[in-house]
Length: 245
Image 1: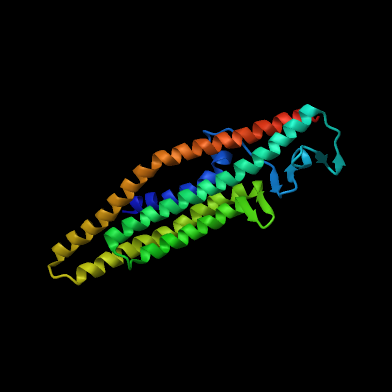
Image 2: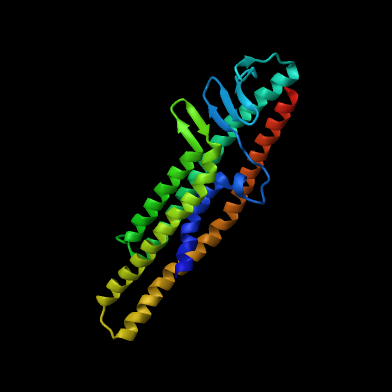
């Protein structure tokens, strides 16, 4: 039972992991190490290469000094800032969308097996809310744009796992309590009640398993696309930095 609940919770956690997987997944070799702040007027990148400010027209200020650029350098800078503006919001949007879909699917399993009044639904909602906050730490939406916080990546994965661990015990206990309460209201001997309890828990287990299998393929596809976009950003960054040495 606990393994099945872990699978269910992992389906939610996987949505948060989409945001961090380009940093932590051994299958993806792209690593975004710079902090990035994006506004309509500029993209600011802070990291090992110093402090870069790139305007939409490709103009660059590095460590407070305006650089004199040729056509190729300006074009690379313009392309890089455009890719940042496109790729990072896309990653967050897709992660949040997958998280919402996973929550909705798991909630349906709980309603079908445990009923609309199950406390497990509240726990799933609380877990989703907590994971959304973790996603926001990595790609933060601001009134004037958004920010990518590279250092937050190292924090959110263990924090997300901790959220799940805290939820697991409550979900398991709620499952047992609610099924026991239902069975106690029905007539029958102890053996019948036990079999009914195990059957009810088994129904939810099977529902969680089936939902994981449904979404696993889409999750793999999405992770690969996130890795591709992260790799594109890193390749453009390296190309630009080499061009303005």
